[in-house]
Every structure is written in structure tokens, then in C-alpha cells.
Length: 163
Image 1: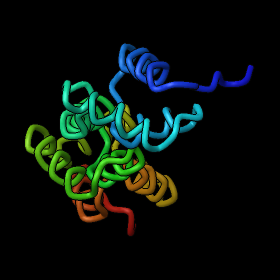
Image 2: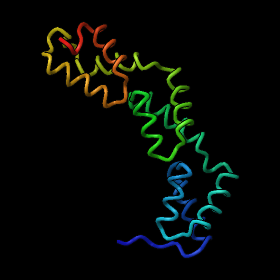
Image 3: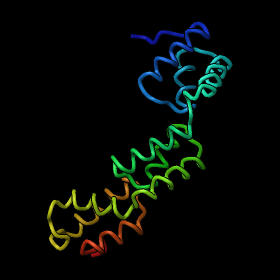
Image 4: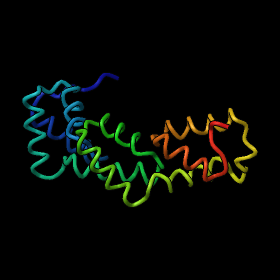
């Protein structure tokens, strides 16, 4: 079914309110939604300004909420969180700031230990083969953790990937 094109500023506002009734959006995401439905840049910008004035679109609040979610619930590392926020149109500086603040509540190393415990399920580090250790390190890297933190967590758990 093709998307219904927005023909007026009023239809654009209604569409934006419907979207925001479901979940929050960054300014960038909302602009894409509006222009993707055929609304002109000028009209989209006018709607965005009104939404921001009412506090309905707020990149700072949105980024903070997402950073906390990704760190606490998804157990992502800081690099993955920043990458995801940037994909959602959050400015680099804001993405770094909110990720750093969310990190204060739970360090990367604590999350790494939790992930290692979940992944190993009681299996000792000495029982893992070198390829298994490398796969685990790669998995952790893909979740956005720094190599230094990964190596330290693996050493604390009883081994390293160089073995």
C-alpha cells in the first residue's frame, strides 16, 4: 500500500502528532518522516519549530533516554551507543555527552563482566579454545566496547584472546 502524501501543513501537524503518540523522535527523524510523505522542507521546518517550542521534539531528552536504555537494558558499549545515536540524527557532541553521563551510572567494565557471565554460563575461561576466545572478543567489540576494556575483562575472567 503506498504512503499517503501529506497535502497541507495541517495534515503534516496531525501526522507528526500521531507519530509522537507512539514514541519519541529526534528532530532529524521527524524531518525525514514529514518530507518522506511529500511535505516541503519549509512546512516541515515550521512544524518542527512548533513541536520543539511545545517540548514534543527534544533531541537532548531523546538522546539521554536512548543512551540510558542502550547501556542499562541492551548492555551496549559506549561506541555502539554513540553510533546508534548518530544514526538517529543526534549531534556528535551531544551523543558523546549523554553516553558519558549514562556511563557514570554503570561502567563498561561492569557490563562486560555481566555479558561474560551470561555468555559463558558457568564455563571456565580455561575451557575455551583460542578461536572461541577470539569470537567472544569480536562479539564484545561489535557491542561497542573498547579493546582495552575487553582485554582487561577477559584477563580478569581467567585468560586473554592472545592465548
